[in-house]
Amino acid sequence: MLKIRFLELYYKKNCSRFYYYNRLNLKYPTFLKFASYFCSMIEDKNQQRTPLSELGEFGLIDHLTKQFNIKQESTIKGIGDDAAVLNFNTNNTVISTDLLIEGVHFDLSYMPLKHLGYKAIIVNLSDIYAMNAEATQVTVSIAVSNRFTLEALEELYEGIALAAKIYNVDVVGGDTTSSTSGLVISVTALGSVDAKNEVYRNGAKSNDLLVVTGDLGAAYMGLQVLEREKEVFKVNSNNQPDLDGYTYLIERQLKPEARKDIRQLLKDLDVKPSSMIDVSDGLSSEIIHLCKQSDTGCDLYEDKIPLDPQVISTCEEFNIDSTTVALNGGEDYELLFTVSQDDFPKIKANPNFSIIGYMKEASAGVNLVTRADTQIPLKAQGWKNFED
Ligand SMILES: [Mg+2]
Image (cartoon, rainbow, N blue to C red; front, side):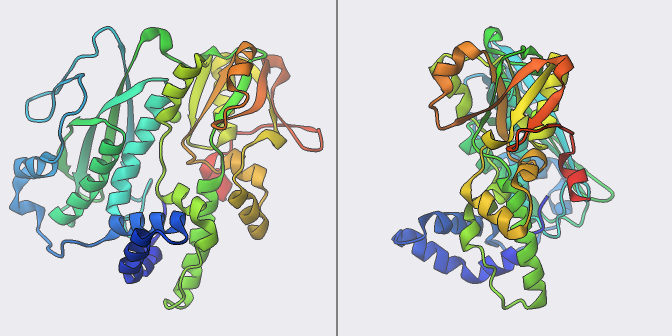
């Protein structure tokens, strides 16, 4: 995850200005909306530093979880008993878990805790939506060392609460325990889906259309911009980061969102994907997952990959190939799915969807068809190898 300490320093100097201009709503509405949001994430409202030992484990759990209200009908019993009780009636339950470890998945010396809490929830919800399910509950467990204060954990839980509120999920449980070294966060997300609407990775058929929501590569380019500005800031801390032309990229990197809306949209269009996955590691590896699970091949058309104009211009500026960024950048949290060709009329004009290729027999392999009309086998590079 991202190193943005320098941004915090910059925003801390300017937050009151951003709030003021945002309220006036005169110019740069997108940038100011984002800047105000970012300020609210890093604002240090509370200068107190209360050691966790003052509360004890049970006091701590009570304190951190008292803000969570139950909104979902399926939550019968939330936090406060030995276990939560849920009732999904005749629907199937979908469960996904992620483990985030300090020093491996995030670096706390740079990552605001509120962001971390928000993102920890988003990445899990994205997996629930990829099953074509409604996300309904989460549990959050953390292990912390005694270098964390109560106020630090409050910040983390503010991010968790914000995501839970926006995505309408209940926080129904979790555990807090001590760790001898860093911070560990484990989030489990639960969802509910009518069995006939479930979508797996393994249902794609030859000739199905390959479709992706939104656009790709922006989160990765946001990271490039922030890394560059950080270097500038290191040289002279009075240099203000030049972020005006990169708002969309930075927002996608700092405030990822999951595609909660797609399930309803597909329902309204009366389209059930034959397979689906969320794009967390980059388009390339997600396509390979679908093909492997479905035992198909695929042709992906380079000229159909959706890119925001800011991604294209910033790739040119950084001299990076935009197709490579879309294929291997990751952290887009869009949904990638396949549909029968019969559904083409229902999705073709929808601005949320891009048809980027079609599935083939497994023997055809998984290929990128370039603008020059040559075929290149796709490789699953993922985020890490891409950085090497
Ligand atoms: Mg996933």
